[in-house]
Length: 408
Image 1 (cartoon, rainbow, N blue to C red):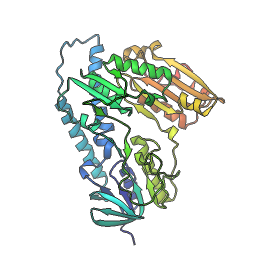
Image 2: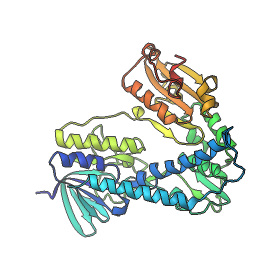
Image 3: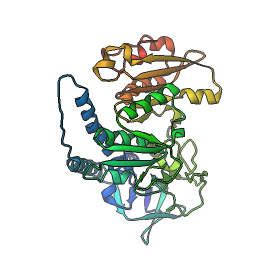
Image 4: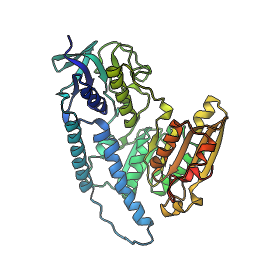
């Protein structure tokens, strides 16, 4: 006899699955080491706080670009921004807890000590189904988490690593007036279209970011290397890859039956929205006997650099070339459109890819709010539209989202 129908180890975005499971009448619990961290990295150190900071930093860029305004001196208060971040994350964390009423929230460090059994600081809890949701963390300190705790802007900042989020922190602080030097491994941009890669680096340099070789130790740097899986708490024998990710099948099930791994832990796609989708799939499989599988290439990726951000959906040009696939590329420059100038996005560009039958298979966008543009393209990919269909799509004018469609 099990204590629970479903036990989730880790309080990140798998809570979306917990809500569905509870609404279906099953008994479910979440084990989280620090209940104040309910919501996971996305809420507390990742998506939400960094985008808040980037949004505020972009206001400074827009102010400097505006022909209407003139501001010779700006006084920035980083402590006020940190306070707003903390209030926002606390509010959202409380909303999650309210949403999970009826789900048992168990605080403590949990370890999967044997199949179906989690030990929480000496208390053994069993469940018919286990969902591992322990995520990843930075392997070194200080790192990006510490940058979000600063209350005063430093005069200078050194960032070292190969995590693409390093570039978000770089432009964020550069736009705030900090002298930023990055020791960044450009190989991390290998999947980017060459033209976009060059333009993105140019854009970052124009914000004041200085690029230096990343081939030696750097004193006083913040380290943003690619994060590593939190798998030390898994004491049972499950299949893992060479990087420590828990290997799963198309049902997100591990090599142990009824034991699932979702989110960053499985290494399929390291984004919050992918984690949520996987957790919902597992929840539906447990409740209804059948979930769903979303291929990694159909999950949109966004790098929220400012003033130009990068978005990718489907297969990139580099991936298509590596696969040896025949494809057609359609490119467009934002400079030719009014919105390019209106939204300070003259340097923006987009590339859309089609297979030999004319079906849409991917896109890369460099633009202000590239993620918003990628949303329309994501629906197009899921709808399996071809070039002829896309050329007939009518979007609101003038908008950035319409630009990729207007040269088809």
